[in-house]
Amino acid sequence: MDLAGYLNVGKELGLDGKELQKYVTAQQDLARDERKLQREYEQVQRDYEREKEDEVHRRKLELLEAESKLPKRQVKGEFAKTPKLPSFDDKRDDTMHIC
Image (cartoon, rainbow, N blue to C red):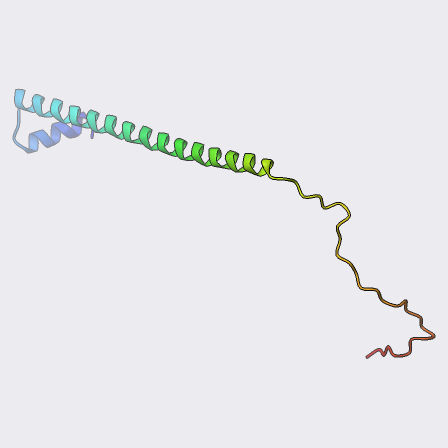
């Protein structure tokens, strides 16, 4: 709320003169304190999120380091063996039917 709003509320409460001035000053102080607390809360939230992200990155790094220490599997030349099939000959293989 702005100064005019505080003045209107103070007048509606029946305040005038020094009492109105004290009321407006007190309300402005409260609003300032609320804004300060809100900024501090937002800073704590940002810090928490940053720490959480840092922890995730740290764990990923640990996992990558652990994986790099594992022995590497050599896959070179390791393929599944295919069954030995006789070669196909049109003249000789008449058991094949096209449906």
